[in-house]
Image (cartoon, rainbow, N blue to C red; front, side, top):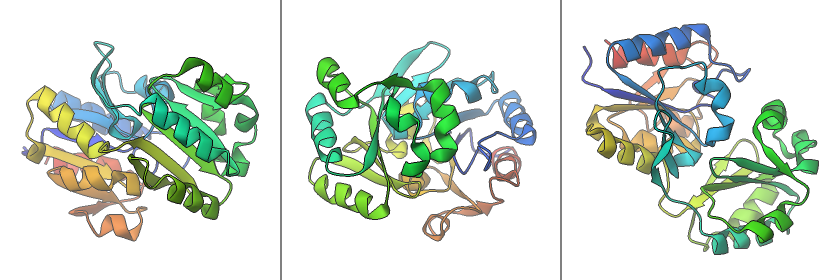
Length: 272
């Protein structure tokens, strides 16, 4: 039996195929891992509200490292294990910067907040593939700026979905000295968390909670926001659809997300 006790799966481009589905073979492999006494967790930029559809497909799932590591959540106890949120004054700074670009604002806690008119136009911001999911799980508001001004709460993650990469680059430059963790995602999205927050820090906090050594963990991913967790885990696995810079830092490469690469990760490295 493998020395590894826990495997952490990124969602988009990793556990989810190009249709945003978890294949039946992957679900069966996950169930097999749980039956063998292993821990399988989600390690994702999504918030809890955006994961409910997939959580229901994995009934033995208990822990999620979500909103890019800003929140580690126990599904069974329905409580936070760890949280590191952006304080309101920094959220306001991001929102002011967003007004200077053609972009869509997405605020994440355990809930997911977007502006109603943007939800109807997500393809314009390079996020059309997520529109159906967003329509099911997000809380829409008429004006995201007025909504936040009236409510003022800590935010685990805030995304700006830009119409162009140049727009994202300008936003990133404006926020470079804001004390935030900035990560490029999708084609033209900018993801923001509190400084020091990464999927890697979330995994470390969960390992402390479970009494598992970080050397006994596997991380699987495909994108830049997976870099820190891939460097942190005991074994790093890249999907074949990952960018070359991700493949270059990983110990192992498995098949792509449409060819059950996650099944390979479980069977060859978690259970073998």
